[in-house]
Image (tube, rainbow, N blue to C red; front, side):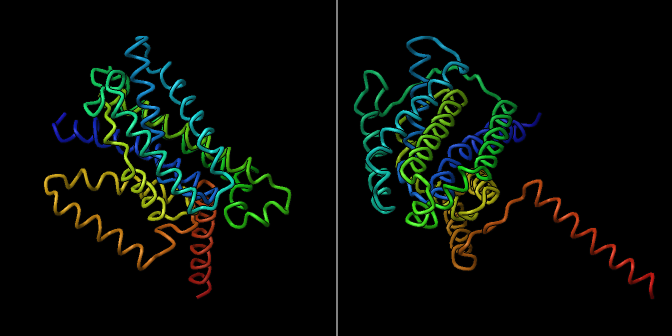
Length: 301
């Protein structure tokens, strides 16, 4: 294999898929439940450090570290959800931002355990592109099913109007809490995959800038579209890495793409459109109907 192919296979695709898995937690919170988390990347750090410390102290492998990371992410999602589920959306963003900064500061100042700013290294690489691809497909399938389920529809109702949702008998607090717990576990899952792919982890990778980037990706693809979040996540994650040879060019091009979409298509690339099986069937039947109508017209002529 050529060095370029090895790079694309071993790093770029794996990196993009892991980041998309972590970013889909923002889709659950913002796209479905209508909450803004400015510290979601800190849950990825929690999952990554849980996996790294499990290996360091107990010599466990990825198949034990992943459940532990997910549990810790869901636990912290529950704990941070307790004080914020009754707050307004702007206050939720502030509280989660402070939580994310607190997690990063704690990791930096706990050098005896976490390695501080230097991070932890020497974690064994126990993933490959097949494992990561399978996990990403499973996560996308799960979130798609979650969106179409009764609970997913309840989340969308809460996002659109909390008072109306409560009047219809939806437990708004429980709905928000469940979304926080699921999102926390999903980001932590991405963190466990990350640390067992890069073999290294440090706090600087999980600051508020990463959380902000995930929010931009969700809005870029379309806040109501899972397909849009996935496509935009892959695009906006791979693009800076592909253009890494020119730091100035990649920043300028990245900003231009985001600004063009925000100004000329504020609903995002996909809006509310989903490229799922049902949509593809409808498109196929529509195209089939158009072709049949043209053939009939030609025959009549």
